[in-house]
Length: 330
Ligand code: PMP
Image 1: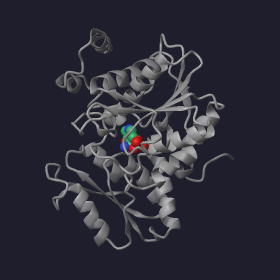
Image 2: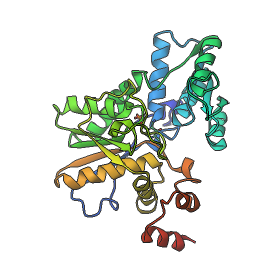
Image 3: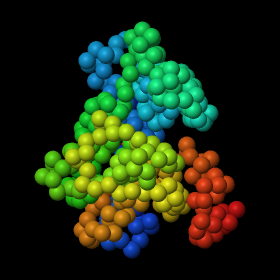
Image 4: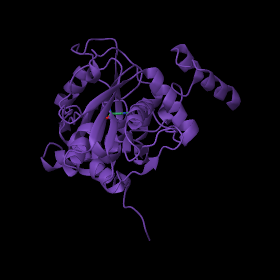
């Protein structure tokens, strides 16, 4: 018999797949690391596991404990499935702008979800930051992982994602491209690849237009999970060689192409990262091996990026080829 003892053992060891069609005309090899193969459907399973196990080792999380985190998405799913296996309770706090569907995913995994008003200052006692701090104080044996300051976030990528990429490419990777949210992925993978290649691998961040990483002030953008309006401690600025700024329109157009042309139904931050990876690959030589990390799957975005009305409302459905493809589908 060959089986895994539990789903947590399925975390990591995600495949690399070549992007054949969207990279047409580019000589370099472009390989995507498909993180939706993780059991919770995103790259965040990796950090959830590492943060929980470290908290157990250091005594921050004890039997009967409760995980409290302000999260509405992928990190919540990762934490919920790790917590389930290990017998912890999860309370996630999220702003009320988060869709009912996303909240229901967390509830489906057995987590409790506390909704807070979006339209209040972060310092307001009703804000989701304040409420999660208060719950972490009030609930007995509560522990708040805080993915924006938890060093185990980048460490998980230094110990798993980075070595996987080096091994899967037999050390031939020349560039690594990833979107930057907490910065955990790029900082951890980047540190590992720099060390193992004596600095030869170039590390490139992809960032939504307006976010601080590419010099903005945090102007709103629609791509989810990436870009910030502050500098989290999980982001190590010394690791990235370059940051490529990508617009929502470019990100979403490429996200749709990944589904149609590569069979990869992935999220908007994946399209964003691939826009940056293709720019990098176009400038690199034929021997370059560009690895781009795709953080999650596309099912959570069906009513947005993959919905023509939503795309049209924001002026993202402009080009002839996209319109033609849509008509053909009907
Ligand atoms: N894409 C998505 C969909 C995410 O949820 C995240 C995590 N916030 C990222 C990209 C960025 O990853 P990181 O936090 O490691 O920078």
